[in-house]
Amino acid sequence: MAAAWRTDVAAGVGGLAPGRLVFPDGCGVLTGTARLHGRGPRGERARGAVPLGPRARPSVLGALGREGVPAATSAEGATSGAVFHAYLGRVLLPALREREPDAALVTDDLRAHETPEVRELLDGSGSPYRHPPSCSPGLSPIEPAWAQAKAEPRRVAVRDKDASHRALGPALDRVSAANAAACFRHCGHERPG
Image 1 (tube, helix red, strand yellow):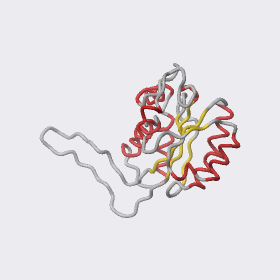
Image 2: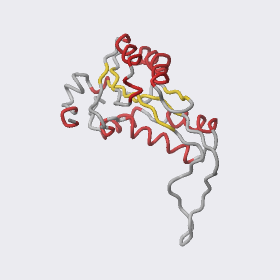
Image 3: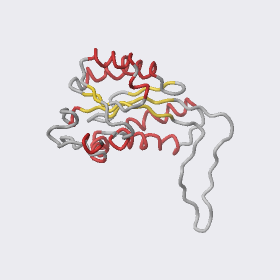
Image 4: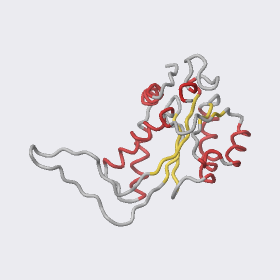
C-alpha cells in the first residue's frame, strides 16, 4: 500500500505536486526530560538529573510545508478532534491562505484528524486534502521535523510548561526550507527546489 502511495515526481501524491503538500500533525512534549546521550571525562560516567514528580505533557500542533513550519500552536493534554479542528480553523488554514494559497493538506490516520467536524472544515476550506495509507508514519515528513524540534526541550532540560513553550518556539523556527526539503526527500517526496 505504501509503495502505491509514493508516485513519480511529476504526478506527486494523489495528483498533487510535492511542492504543494503540507503535513499537519501533533506531538506531545513531556516536561522533566533530559538529553538521551551525554559525554563525560574519559573513563567516567556523564551525569545528569531528571526530576521526579508530576510532569506536564502539552500537545504541540504544527504543519510542515515547503518553507518549513507555516503555523504552530500548543494545547493542554492530548490532541482531540476539537483541538485539531480549532488548530485548523484558527491557525493553520488562515496562515496557508495568506502564505501558501495553493497548499494541499495530507493528514494522517489519527482519529482526531478524521472527525466529521474536521472533514467538514476541510471540505469547506477549498484546499485539497489527502490521507496516506494507515500506519505509515514513514511517509510523513513532519515526523523527522518533530524529532528535531523535540530535541531542543531535552537539550535545555525543560521543567515546566512555560519553559517548554519557550524552547519549542525557536526549535520550530529552525525547521527551515532546507530542513523541510531534507525531510521531504527522506520520506520519498521529492519536491522542486
